Length: 235
Image (cartoon, rainbow, N blue to C red; front, side, top):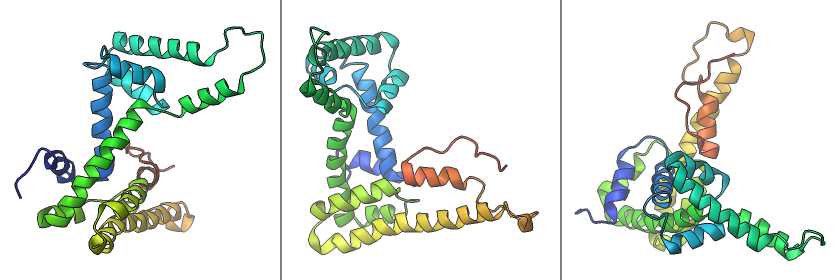
C-alpha cells in the first residue's frame, strides 16, 4: 500500500520491532514537543500563553531543560512563574488561605502542556494504526511481530480500540494486542522467578539464562522505565 503523510511516521515507528511501539511513539512526540517549545515556538504568543497557564509535569520540566538551551528555558520559566504569582498568591499575605485559589493551584500543578499535546496526537496516530491494521495485511503482520506492548499501552490501546476499530474487527485486534502484552508478561514472570531462584544456595553454579536483567525489564513493562545501558549485576 502506498505510504501517505499519515502512515509514514506510523510505519517508521513499527518498523523497529524493539520494545513497545507505543513507548517509541511517546518518546518521539516528547522529543518533538520539547524541541518545539524551547525552539521555534518560544516566542509564539499562543504557545507561551498555553505554557504559562498549564506549565509542565515533573517529567517534562526535566525534558525541556535537557533538550533546550538555557536562555529559552529561563524565558519560559520566568513567564510561567509570573503567571503563578499573579493567579494563585494573595495580594495581602496577612489573610486566611483562599480555598479556591489553592484548589486552582492544585489543578494547575496536575496539568502539562506537553502531556496534553501528546495525548491529542496519540489519539490521531491510533486512528491511523487501527485503519492500517484493518486494511493493510503487511502492517498487520508488522504489528503482530512487535517485541511486546507494555502494560500501560496495552490498557490504553485496548480501551481506545473499542471506539476506533469497527465492531467486526475488535476481537481480532484485541487478540493481537493482548498477545503481545501477555506473552511478555509470562516471559518476565519466568525470568524473574528464575532470578529469585538463583539466590538459593542449591542453585549455585547454575546458568542465569536471561534473568540477569529481569528487574530492569519488569520495570520497562510495568512502568515504561527505559533499560539502562548495562544491567545491574547480581548481588
